[in-house]
Structure formats: structure tokens, C-alpha cells
Image (cartoon, rainbow, N blue to C red; front, side, top):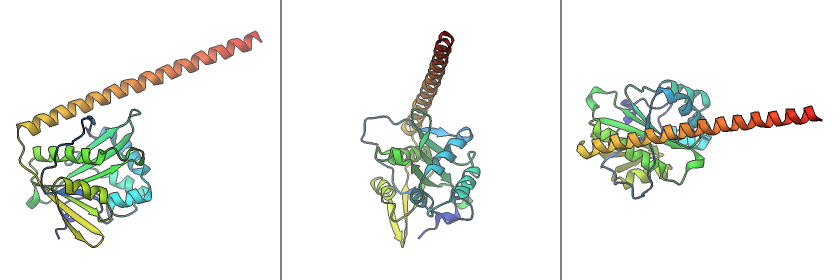
Length: 240
């Protein structure tokens, strides 16, 4: 079985690789009609990325990285993210917390420049909404547009959710003991894939800015209410 760890460095240093992403045919479009805003995220969101991963419990960390990564290993992984080479995608809730993150790691080996690897994590509170599959579709589209021909997912065999996403996309899955590898061949980019990615990114950025404005508004309103309450209490004390 191909060992993608010789190409990619998307897991914490000095630790065995776990669930990272991959496959072998383009995934079908999502059947849902609800748009899930997924935006590309960069260094400006690194604190939120770290907070999201630290929130994962030991079992979820085990599924994501292939072992129960401790806090220090997660912080090291985040510190070594290469935003110039790789691509990260995120889904934010109304409080602008990252509730799902995908990492698309591009090959470091010059012989495999058309290969990439996919890894994803979803907060426990956001499970059952299909976010992992949506992030996978988003990553596949970006990978196609970047000239990637083969996408890999290296996951624990017990990570049935990730393997189901890969299998549904048409990936070839090989099992080797406790680990499984999926590879998905991607079609070349076309006009539709490029325009769709631009539109999706625009929708996601608009959604993020609206959430940021709403959060700022409600924060300001809460502060004004606290001030008014303080003024009322001060008046009541003065009268009494």
C-alpha cells in the first residue's frame, strides 16, 4: 500500500500519521439544498484553528491524527501549518467559532506534485450535519483547480464516517490492519469548477462578515444594557 506520509507533513511532528485526506474520483454534488458557507482560512484564524483542535476529546483527536494527540502536539501541529503551500477551509458558527476544519496538504515530493492529502475534524456539537462531506467537496474542487490529479485520505479503519465520505465520492479504499487508505482520481479543472469556487468563496466571506457585524452589534447592545442597568441602580441607591 502506498505510504502517503513520505509526501506530506500535515500531522504534528514526531508522531504517527492518522486521519489525513485522500481519494480517487470526483465526489458527487451535495444533494442538500442548504448552502453551507465554507471559507478558505489563513494565518489570521490560527488561534481559532488551535482552539477548535484543542476542544476535541481524546477519541476525536485519535481519529483525526491517528493517535490521541496531547495539547502540546496539537499546538506544534498548528504552529507548523504552512499557509503558503497548503489550504485550510473552515465553517464558522454565529459566534465565529470554528466548528469544522479541513486541511488540504499538497505533496512535498517533487515526483508527486499532482498529489494532495485531505484531513478533517468537526466539533462534537456540530456532528450530523454533513459538514465533513461538504468540506471534502470544497477541498476536492480547490484541488482540481490547483492541478491535483490524485487526492489521498489516510485514516484509521474505525473512522467509518471519513471512509464513507471517501467511498461515496468513488474513492478506492485499501485496508491494512488498523489503517485504511483511500485514493480519488480527480478530473482536470474546467470553467465550471473555477467559477464555482470563486462564487463559493464569495458567499462564505459575505456570510463571515455578516456574522462578524452581528456579533459586534449584539456585543455593543449588551454593553449599553449593562451601562443602563448600572445607571438605574446608581439612581435607586441615590434615592434610597
